Length: 477
Image 1 (spheres, rainbow, N blue to C red):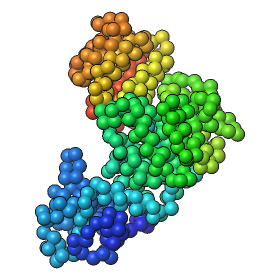
Image 2 (image 1 turned 90 degrees about the vertical axis):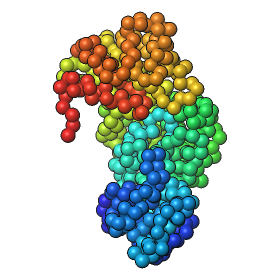
Image 3 (image 1 turned 135 degrees about the vertical axis):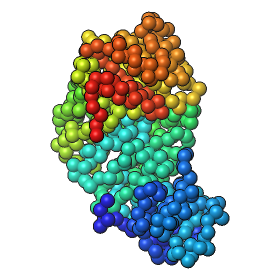
Image 4 (image 1 turned 135 degrees about the horizontal axis):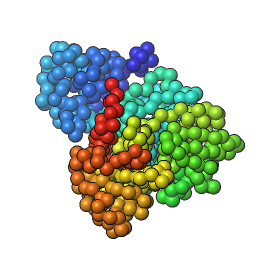
C-alpha cells in the first residue's frame, strides 16, 4: 500500500468513532492503519481484537505488543485479563469498547465519512461478487475506484474494505451479504452508499431469513440506508424487487430485459466462453461482447452499465469496462480440456436460483452433445432444503441432462427428483467426491459438457481440480 495517501488515525479519533474508553496511553498517539491480523500487522498500526468464529483476537494481544505494536482495542469484558498497569510503562495505548466487531464497523463508517469517496453498495441473492467486479471494471475507466477483496461482504469484511480508502479514491464498490435479519441494515449503515444495487431476490439463506418475504425485507434495507439524494439501481425483471421500487422514496433506475427498464439488453446471443447483446441506453445503443457465459450474466452486466450511466460515464467507457471484465474464479468459468471435454466451473457457491440458471446455461451450450451435471448440496435453506433439492433433480431431468452426479447430505433428494421426472436410475450417481471422480474418468468422452456446482462449504472445486489432473492440465503456480 502507498503510505503517502493514507489517512492516519489518532487515539482520540478511535475513541470518538467507537465511543470507547481510554485505558492507558496518549490520546494524541498516531497510527497508520487499523488491523485485525496479528500475522500481518505493522508497528505503526492499531490492533483490534476481533472475536471470530475460529479465533479470538484477544489471545494475540500479548503477541502484538511483544512485536512492538503500541495500540490495541479490546472488549471491556476482557480488560481484567490484561496487565493494563504494565502497559502504562511500555507506552501502549489501550482502548476498551463494548464489542470489537461493532467497533470495527464504527471505525469504517468514521473513516468512510472523512474521505471524499462515494460508495456503490450491491446486494442480492445471486451475482453480488460478479456484479461488484463488473461495476468496478466500468468505474475504473474514469475514476480511482476501490473494490472489495474476494467476497468481503460481512460485518468484518466490509469494514476492512472501507478502511482501505485513501486520499484520492473517488469511489468504493462494496457488496453486502447476509445470513440473518438486520445484517444488511448494519452494513448499509456502515457504508452509507450514494448508489444501491439489488441484483435479484431468491431463495438464499432461508435458514436465517425464513422465507422469500424475509429475503425481500432484508435486501430492501439497503434502500432505507441510501443517502437522501441516493439512487437505487434495481432489476426490472424481478417482481419482488419491483415491489421494493414502489416503496422507496429514492430515485429508481431500472435495468433488465423488460421494456420498462431504462438500461436494457437486446438481441442476446449465447456461445461457449461468452455472450453478446446490444446495450440499450436512453440515448444510444452499442454492441457488447462479454467473456463469460450464462444469460443471467447479462443482468449483472446491465446493473454495472446502469451504475456507469448514472455517474455520467460515456457509452464507450461502459462498453470497454464490460468487455475487459475477466470471470471470477469458480463463477461460470468455461474451459475445454485437452481431451475435448467442456467444463463449466461454477463451484464458488449455489442456491436454487443460481443452480437453475447454471443448468439452463448448460442446456443452451451443449447443442447436440452429452451434458453432465455434478452437483453438491445447496446449504442454508433450512426446512425447505429437501424440497428444493428435489426440484433441482426434476429440473435436471427435464433439461435433457444425460447423467447426474450428486454429493452431500441431500444427494438422495436430488436423485428422487430426477427419478420422479422419469430419469433412469442408472444415469444417477450418488457418492463422495472421490467416488464421483473415479466414475467420471470411465464415463466421460470427448465432446461432453460438464457443469460442476455446489455451495461454498461443499468445495466442489475438488472435482474440477481432479478432472484437470486427469486430463494432464498443470495447476497454476
